[in-house]
Length: 410
Image 1 (cartoon, one colour):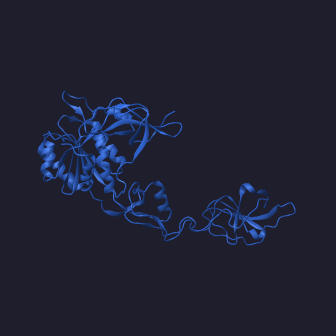
Image 2: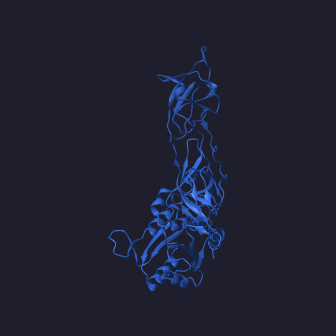
Image 3: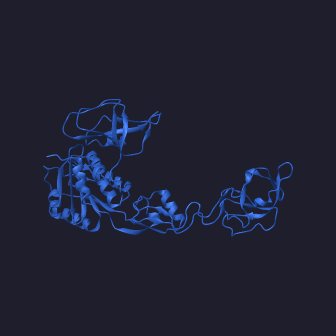
């Protein structure tokens, strides 16, 4: 009996937990999620500094001649990184470079583009007010202010902010270590010709690549032949060392192979073999060995990748502490039709999602939708979500799950 997609997703997510929170070195935190609110301990900028190359002045010295021109003597230069200096004498200025400390008694900076240099003197006629071109201490961040709330996913800009206020380590949910295993005596890896009856293992390589993109530490567990003892050892030892295991094949209700039998045994009967009302990726298995989640994906290459997006990626996000677990659906206009028959399933149609010249999203369903057609999957960057029914026509609005970056349609 088929079950709804939402039921299967909930079954998985209810049995997956956040990983341990820990202090992780800043440069290892990309795409991880904060486990606590992050508060600034330093001011940004840490001191008053100039926003431009120019000349630091005292506005009290701005006495123009009848033509409206100000003339000041240049008494020195202040570079970024120099110690604090001072404008000591009246009617003087200091040449100053972007980021340098504002000299004592200076209260404005005139941009270099606005002055004329004549030997040791500058002249200018542009109006200047106190505070011009000065970045005040703490104008961006003040000590004690909230930088990022708990459960913030750290991107490149976040890491830059944290570096700017001195964070060497950040409290985050640690990165998951996930193993990928392929089972079956018929599977061989790349590097040698095929013998009769053998097929190349593509799923493991695709799944490792997707996992890497999902921000986990990927462990290649290789190909295990149909040997109960070898399978038992691989699953038990991996479950003791890793945060999750992903395998593919042998998950259909009618299947009976060594992998299924061994997983049922080592999970203590916790594996659930499901038939889900979707196409592709109808068969799916999930359970735990101890507390380690095990994802049994379909053997067909496209089905394995779609199953990953619907079940494994949301679970990884939960392990990492994310709040938004499921990929958002986007509305796009279909450029062609997709015909289907009523079968009680939601179809996830391999498609190309593009942005047209007006900035609108358009989706084109690809011709070959077989669950074994991995090459056609490589051409797609989205899945058109097609409820049970007759499909859709060109011009219809279709909900789409984006997989990869958009392309431009010109």
